[in-house]
Figure 1 (tube, chains in turn red, yellow):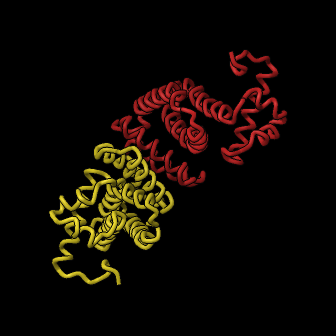
Figure 2 (tube, chains in turn green, red):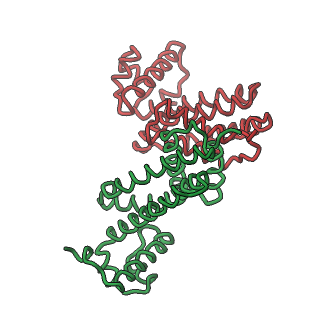
Figure 3 (tube, helix red, strand yellow):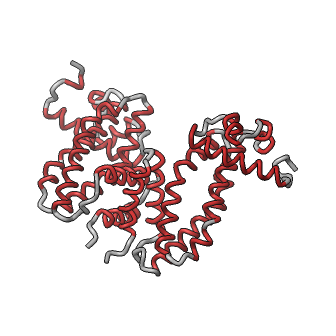
Length: 190
Length: 190
C-alpha cells in the first residue's frame, strides 16, 4: 500500500482537496509548467504537504484531470433526469467545450511525461459517451434537437469545436457565438 | 536565373503540368513520403524530367500546394458573381473542407523539411479571406445566410471543421452530414 492509497484522516482529506483546488487556480494562471512551490503558496500549506499527497507533478496533474472528468460525470445523473431535456443537452455540450482546452493542456503535459492517460480515461470516456447519447435521445424526444442528428456527426461536431477552441485559444465570446450557430444547426427547422 | 525561372517551351510546360498532375495522384495514394520515382512512373516520364522541373521533393510539394491554392483562388471571381449567392457560399465552404486534409499533409511535410510555407501562402491566404467575406455578405443579402453571422465565428467554424476533418480522417459521408448541421446553423431561422 503506497502513501497515496492509505485512507486519509479528515484533516488530511481536507488538505488534499485544498491542494487540488489551489493547483487548478495556479494552472489556469501559470499553465502546466507551474511549480509545486506556487501551488503550495496558493493553498497556504507547506511544500511537504503537497509532496505527501502528490509525490510528483505528474501525480498532481493526473489527479486534476481525473477530478475534472469525475465532476463532469457526477453531474450526469441529474442532467439526464432534467425537466428541460434541450437545456440539458446544450448545457452539457457547452461544459465539455469550456473544459476542453484546460483538460487538453494537462493531458498533453502528462503524455509528454510519458504517463498513459488514455488507460485511466477510457472508463470515464465511455460514461461520457453514453451520457451524450442519452441526452441526445431525450432532447430529440422533447423536440429540442432535430430527429435526424446521429451520434457520429454529433461527436464530430463536439470534437471539432473542442479541438479548435483549444488550438486557437478561443475567448468566451467567440466560443459562445460559434456554439450558437452549431446549436441552431442541431435544432429542428420550424 | 535558375532553371525553374526560365520561360518553358510548350512541350516542357506540358511535361511540368503532367508531372504535377501525376504527383497529386501519387500523393493521394501513397502519402507525402511518395518517391520521385513513383511520380515519374505515374507521369510516364523519366526521372531526369522530374528533377529538371523540381530539383527536390520539397520543390515538388511546394508547387502542389501553391497549385491547389491557386485553383481555389481561380474559381473565386466566378463564385463571387454567381447568381445563387447561397450555393456559392456553401459550395466554397465545402471545397475548403474537402481540400483541407490533403493540403495539410503537404504543408506539414514542407514544414518538417524546414520550408517556410507561410511566407508563400500569406498572399493567397489574404485573397481567400477576402473572398470568404464577399461570399458571406452576398449570401446574407440574398437571405441565404443569417444576418448576424460575423467573420470571426465563420472563420472559427471553418477552422474547426477543417482541423477535425484532417485530424480524425473524416470520410465523405461524415463530412457531408456534419456540414449539413453547420450549414443549417448558418441559415436564417424561417
